[in-house]
Image (cartoon, rainbow, N blue to C red; front, side, top):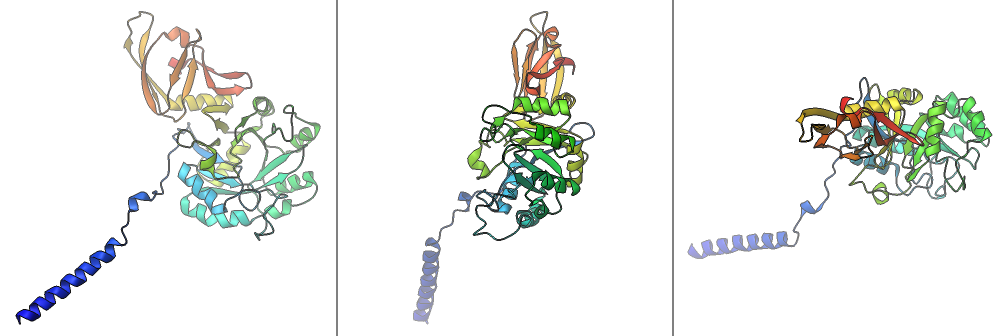
Length: 366
């Protein structure tokens, strides 16, 4: 009996040791794996509208990009975007020999992922021509294939028939305009026909100041896009600021509301901690971002102490009438002694209203 008990105990110990040895040959460290999480881009809403963060220009392997369409959705979700448009070139598909599918394929592949992630995906395509007129994105399309025609005006006319919003891309791209940005007779013709509705004032890493003037003077919608072909995290320092974005002030978070807002020109271009566009929208954004409280008198009898709370990710750079610079960091609070009379006509130098102008406001009495 005693020998049987010893044998049983030995067997249990042997099995336990074997199991332990097996476990020790497969030790997992799940904490090494990156957790899928979404950043938050803090840009406040303005009265009557929600502020949506959008990128309307990007590419996949279905034109000259290097990623699968669903990857663009995942990137956008991770970064905190609300809406994107995959705008693969209609006429430029270097991978066509290896990848089957028509001009709607990138949208159709990405759409289920966009639904799952809560990203608004806009069906779109890029009409690709030499200058003039250059490259143009058509957004809110029904069928991208119908734009695959030889004549550029015919392609854009078809886009308009489908209710598209048409953007002139990177008008200052030196590969097509090596000397300067030019508004050519063909662009005037397309504009008069309603075949240009907005222009990129910013593309990838390039700002075109004169284009901002074009948009303001012609009441065209300002656009800022990444035009990303590679992996977005390899292209930008996303830890410090978002990719170039178009801020759309929509009545609600929906594709139809974005479209309505874009045709009404309710957008601002966000890039490199600058915001460019209509003066009224810039003023609304600044007002929604800053909460300013008078705390009392300062040591200097001409100054008062103010608490300034910035509820936005945007860092505001304020130049007063003496030329002094006041920095209001994003998502932060500062307390500063200021002379109110020198801030009656403050210049917010990173809120751009034109090629040579910025928003001017009475900062302390917004």
